[in-house]
Figure (cartoon, rainbow, N blue to C red):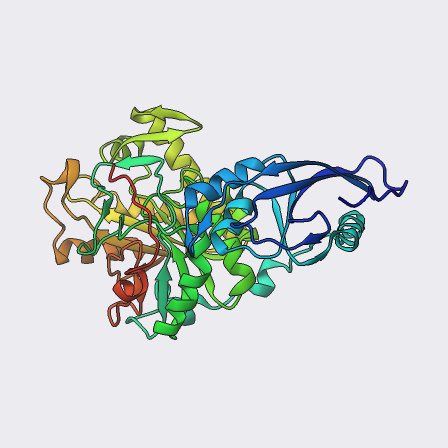
Length: 420
C-alpha cells in the first residue's frame, strides 16, 4: 500500500472512493474481474487507504452475471466514486443510478487521486440554459404528430422505458406482445443502459427519424425512467426532438424537469373536464401514494392536467392533447374539452377512436361520422390532428409508411412488465 498523502487544505470536504486495484499502486482492474476494492477516505486534499473489500466476480468466461454486478455495487454502496480501468454499460448505468461516479481510467493512484480531488473542489460555473424561445423549433415541419395536413416523411422512435402507471382508464389494458397496434403495448421494457445504443441503431434503420418519443407502455411520469432517458439523449442527440406523452396527473410536479431534460413536445391525454364524465372513464388514480376513486379523484386529475398544460406551454413546450372519443360517454363533451385545453395553452387536439376493450368492451368504436363531428367541434378552439396511427409504445419509423420495430427491438435486452 502507498503511504497516506497529506495536504492540510480544504478541510470539511469528505468522501469515500473505491479503487479496482491488485497492488494498491495502480488502477488496473476491470469492474467485473477485480477480486477486491481498495477503499480510500478523502478529506480535503488529504486521503488514505482505510480497508480492502472482497468483490464477487461478475464476469466469468466472457459471461456477465447481472446479479453479481448488483452484489458488487452493494459492496461499495457507501462510496461516492469508483476508479476502474474498464467497465461495461450495464455496470456503469447501475452505479450511476446509485449516485456513484465512475472514473474509467488507468494509472498510478498517487497521481490520479490528487488530480481528482482538486478537480472536485474547484468552483464550478453554474449552468445557465438558453431561453427556451431561442431553442424552439417548428414542429409542424419536423414532428409527424404536429405536421399540418397529410402525414409527411419524418419518422420517430418510441422508447418503451416507462412501466408503471398512476391511473387506470376503464378502456386500457397494457400488454406485452408483437401483434397489437395500439398504445399501452410493447415487446417489453427497454433498460436505461440500452437507450443510447437503441437510438443509434434506430437512426441507422430509419435516417428519417427526427423525434425520440416516450409513450409508455405505462405513464411516462409515473416513474423517473423517461426523464432519465431524455437526459442521457439530450447530451448525445441534441438534434432529435424529445417528445413525451402522459396522462397529466404528475405533470405539474415535473414541468421544470421536462424542460431541463430537453423535452420540446408534450402530449397530454384528457378525456373529460367534467368530473362526472371522467369518473365513467377512469376507475382510480394513484396520487401521492394513495389510491383514490370517485369525483374527488377526478377533480385532482383534471386540475393537474390543465395546470400542467398551462405550465408546460408557458415554458415554450408545444402541447398536443389526445382525447379518446367514447360514444355515449364523452362524445357530447368534446367542445368543452377543446375549449378548456385551448385556454390552458394546448396547440392541437388529437381525437382518437375508442378501441372497445376492458370495462368498456361493450361500447362500439365511434363511426367515421362521429369522429368527423367531434373534430368539427374541436376545430372551433384549436387545430384538430387527423392522421393518428394508434402507435405502440415501441413504434419505430415513419408513421403510416415504414415500421422497423421488429428489427430494432428483436433480440435486444428487454424486461418483462405487468399487464395490469
